Amino acid sequence: MQQTIVVKIGSSSLTSDEGGLNRSKIIFFASELSRLHQQGYQVLLVTSGAVAAGFREMGYVLRPKSLHEKQAAASVGQALLMQAYHEAFAAHRLGVAQILLTRSDFSNRKRVHNASMTIEELLRRRIIPIINENDTVVVDELKFGDNDMLSALVANLVRARRLLILTDTDGLYTEDPRKNAEARRIERVAEIDENIYRIAGGSGSSVGTGGMRSKIEAARIAMRGGVPVFVGRVVEDGDLELAVNNTGKGTYFITSEHNLPMKKQWLGFHSFPVGRVTVDHGAETALVAGGRSLLPAGVTAVSGDFHPGDVVEVVNSDDQTIGRGVVNYSTWQLQAVAGLGTEEVQKRIEVQRIEVIHRDEWITLTAAKQLSE
Ligand SMILES: Nc1ncnc2c1ncn2[C@@H]1O[C@H](COP(=O)(O)OP(=O)(O)O)[C@@H](O)[C@H]1O
Ligand SMILES: N[C@@H](CCC(=O)OP(=O)(O)O)C(=O)O
Image (tube, rainbow, N blue to C red; front, side, top):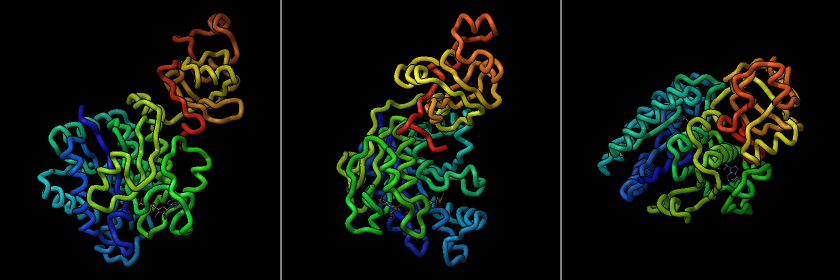
């Protein structure tokens, strides 16, 4: 089976600090991606740079700050960006396709399915899907904000072999290397904990938006979905190939998770919980470590307004999120039987399924696995 690689290129790698597209960089990256393609990989590109490419063209001196100015700049810049990629990949006899996505597209299962089918067809036809956020239509709360998270969700969607997040520094350092020249590179990260978050700062350039922090956040989601991540620099011929082969200039985020099925991806990354269920220690262990279903006996508190089929967040006795699942009870039913054994539950109410959350409809999101939403 062909392996799929998702490559994300940030604004800082495609433009100059003053703004405007750097065509020679686009030509370089197209050549690096084509080389992977030639080696038999299926390649998807998530690219930023629309705002950076468009704002000079529109007459702004600096990257605009307001949402509508940025959206206008992106709509001008996106066309320039695609034109540049089209020319650059044509030199390698590869076609390109533009795909613009928003966060809300990912919470709609039908849309996700359509996007996934389209991507598969493009890859079959040896076309490089080039993905960016649909900047013109997004509203503030739904914005990815930068493309790091978008690339993680795309990598999970296509069950990528690896996600490569390319930026202007060669990986994660113990401190922002722009601020402290003594900072050391971290070669390998197996778990994203508080310490990793603490050292990752914001963007160092005037064109990038998320900085290292958003790359860490994206890496965490990709790792949870079973996709290993590389964050680093690709500047010389052959660097991208080195990055794929574990010898790149950057940091490797490894994962022991398996690729998540589509249903669990939706549950973990895109669903909107409408209620909250608190469980005791025994139930927490059964769900998180034992891979078991949640029974009413382990429930200690219930809040929100939910019905069977809704998604609820499950928290432990310290009020920490441990996961999400599809609930088989409504709020009042669960309140009536919380803490009771199976027989007692069946005497008091009528439910389709005894499990509050069945293990097939559950995703663990504890500590390192926890989502930020
Ligand atoms: N601990 C860190 N290690 C490496 N880079 C860091 C760190 N903290 C903050 N950064 C900053 O993150 C920047 C990369 O993010 P960003 O500017 O958003 O790039 P992009 O446009 O490629 O997404 C680096 O240039 C660097 O200044
Ligand atoms: N969708 C936007 C991405 C914004 C952005 O700067 O992202 P990034 O460079 O990845 O931090 C664009 O194309 O300009």
